[in-house]
Amino acid sequence: MKNKKIILGIILVLIIILSLIFINFTSKKTYIINLPNLDKVVSLSIEYNHRNKYISNKNNIKKVYDAVKKVNKTKQKSEENKPVAGESQMKVTFYYEDSVAQIVYFYKKNDSYYLEEPYNGIYLIDKSIYDTVFSLQ
Image 1 (cartoon, one colour):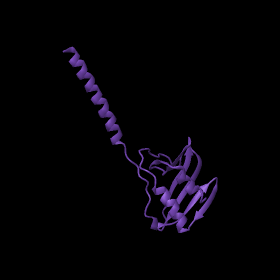
Image 2 (cartoon, rainbow, N blue to C red):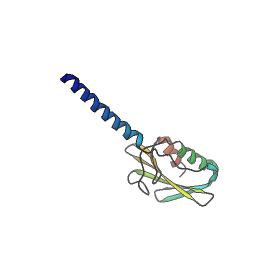
Image 3 (tube, one colour):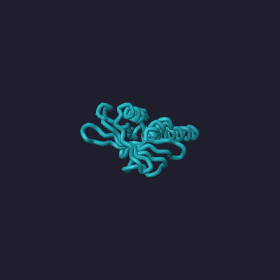
Image 4 (tube, one colour):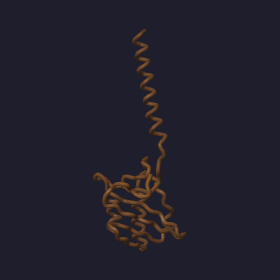
């Protein structure tokens, strides 16, 4: 009888722990990159090492746009106006028909590459995505 109570107690504790872990993972908000349609992008700028390059060539805009759209969903929130840490930062500003601009940052941190949309999400990206944008600056 005593052993059954101990076993039931252990099972109950395990169920509670697993439930809390499940709730923690499912309740976090998922962040998705926030870009309007490519047709609305009229130009973009890439700022790196205090140099700013403006791009209005549609093929190059599409390369950057497609690279940004390849990022996966994330549960990591960006809470700053720009990345706090990271090296080789590139600031990419998309300019739209209606004079609205949107900024994303590409950077390297601890041998991994990231894209950060301020106040939205931080996305782990492949080095090839970073290199695509870097090649245009």
